[in-house]
Each structure stands twice: as C-alpha cells, then as structure tokens.
Image (cartoon, rainbow, N blue to C red):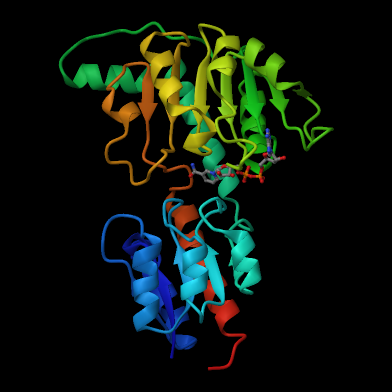
Length: 317
Ligand code: NAD
C-alpha cells in the first residue's frame, strides 16, 4: 500500500466516491490534513517522518511546499497541485530531488474562472452586492450603476483565462485591451495589445490574469494606481500579491478608483485580512472561488488524485 498526504479535507466533498475507487484500485491510502487551514512545511515533514509519503496533493497556495519538505520527505515522487498556481512550491529544489510537479491545467477551469471575473465586473458596475446587503437591512437603496457595454476592459495577462474573459467581454459589446509581454499577436483579432501604461490609463475595468512570480509581485503598486481613472474598477481573481495590498486598501478608502473585486488573498484561508475587515462598500470579496462550480470541481478533485496516483504507480514498492 502506497501513501499520499492530502493538504485539505475539502477534497472529500465533491467526487469522493470516484476518488475512493481510484485509490482502492491502485492500493493507495490518503492521509488528510484534519485542520481547516493550510499546512506548514513543519507539519508536512512531521507526517512524512511517521509514514512513507510518496505524493502530496496540494490544495491551497498557502500550503508551504518549500525546500525543507523536499529535504525531509525522502520518499516523495510527486506534488500534485489542485489548480494551476505553483508559486508556493519550490520547483528548483523539487527538480533537484527528482520530484515531479503536476497541476490540473489540462482541465477547462479557465472558462469557469473567466465566468467569475466577468460576474464581478457586472457586480461592481451595477452595485449588485451592495444593494443586496442594504435591501436585506430594509434599506430601499436604488444605486445608480454604470454601463458595462461600450466600456473598455483591460486584461493584464492574455493566457487561457484572459482570453476566455475577452470572449465574454466582446459578447457584451465591450472594447478590449490587453497587456502580455509574452504574447505578440492576440488570438482574438478584436483585442488590441497595448503597453501596461496605456492599459491602466484607458481602461474602465482592469482584470488581472497572470501568474505570481518575482517579476509580477506587486506589479500593481502606487504608481500604477496613479495612472488609473478615478472611475476605474480593478478585478483580481489571479493572485493577491500581484497588487500591493496596503496600497489597494488606501486607494479604495480614499476613492482614488471606483472600486475593486478580489477573489484571492495574501494568506488563505483569509482570517484577518485588512481588505475584508475594512467593510468598504466599494470592495467585493469572494473566498477564492474562481474555479468553484460543481461541474469543474468534480473534474479537478478527481484529476488531482489521478495525477498523484499516476506518478507513484510508476515506482515499485
Ligand atoms: P496562463 O498561464 O494560461 O496565462 C498567464 C498569462 O500571463 C500568460 O499568457 C503569460 O504570458 C502572462 N504573463 C506572464 N507574466 C506577465 C506579466 N509580467 N505581465 C502580463 N502578463 C504576464 O494562466 P491562466 O490559466 O490564464 O491563469 C492565470 C492565473 O490565474 C494563474 O496563474 C493563477 O494564479 C490564477 N488562477 C486563479 C484561480 C481562482 O480560483 N481565482 C483559478 C485558476 C487560476
């Protein structure tokens, strides 16, 4: 019997019967993190010191898969990531120890995340969440929103989610700009590729869709906010630290932009996040649910286990 460590018990929720069959068929036992928070490297190493762990199924970008994990967990063959973000995994050290990194990027979660990003655009512009909150407190508040059609959407990062969002925006008769230093010609002809300054200056909505790397950390900071229109909205469903979080809070408090919607936080699950705690009317917060649809999760939850099982099954006991 081989063993894998699973960093969240949430992975038992959506497609467990099929996953359990997969594990039984391949004689793999899953050891779950029983707490409701992400795992530290120390906790992971402690599990590996007691059981021969050959794979780790990583659920959150706050799980700490650093060099200590690779040094101490000598039997590790695979890190299987739920989703695509691998910024919390030390891939250089993983390579050194011959540990394979798998993600679920072969699935269509980009369409699902693009749905949320576009939903947040509509929610911000028509103040949907704000009116819902006030009406339930018996305030008949008829907020005057903004049109979405005819407005300019600036997409930073024109990969899978960025492109899927562009298709939605074009269907809503928006004008679409994009900045992506690694793509010259957009696949979508109606999208105009521009530099980041032009995008920030001209866009009514700015949506971020690039990975978090050393290069993109705080790519939206005080100088970039200064370029944005006072009426602009920022949507971040990618990674929190693409944006200077303190500056974002200040900018929203002082209404230097019209508003923001965020799905991602510096520490997740977010417990004491100043943005969430600010209770600002011009900020919409969702708890990292970009890929959370029944249809998509069923596929992703199964795939993350399948990827781990596939790799460890290549090795004899
Ligand atoms: P992708 O790899 O298909 O696209 C990323 C794009 O970003 C690429 O085209 C790349 O060239 C571009 N890029 C890289 N550096 C850049 C820079 N400095 N400036 C502008 N663009 C840059 O990835 P994807 O599937 O579209 O996902 C994008 C991000 O969304 C992921 O990295 C992940 O962090 C996030 N994500 C969030 C959720 C969620 O639940 N909220 C779900 C999936 C993915």
